[in-house]
Image (cartoon, rainbow, N blue to C red):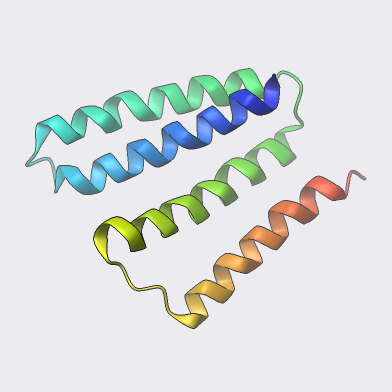
Amino acid sequence: MAWVFLFLAIACEIFGTISLKLANGFSKPMYLMGAVTGYPLAFSFFAFSLKTIEVSVGYAVWSGIGIIGTSILGAILFQEHISPAKALCISFIFVGVIGINLIKY
């Protein structure tokens, strides 16, 4: 169940971040409400996940998948450019998340 909470935390964080972009510097309060809702939910779900997942693993997965998901959605929703160099760095993050899950000690 801890992994379900972790992935819910990631989804809520991505939702909150995309909502901040859509809020356009606080000029669109409806979207700002997404951030105000998404981030506290993300931290709550993350706290529940840490009951059984090591903090080093949980935080690496949370931040890494959050970065990857936000980057992909930024490209899709906002036509943000993902250069080959940026894609390479994102792939390093992915490899790091996988690695920290495989290496326990």
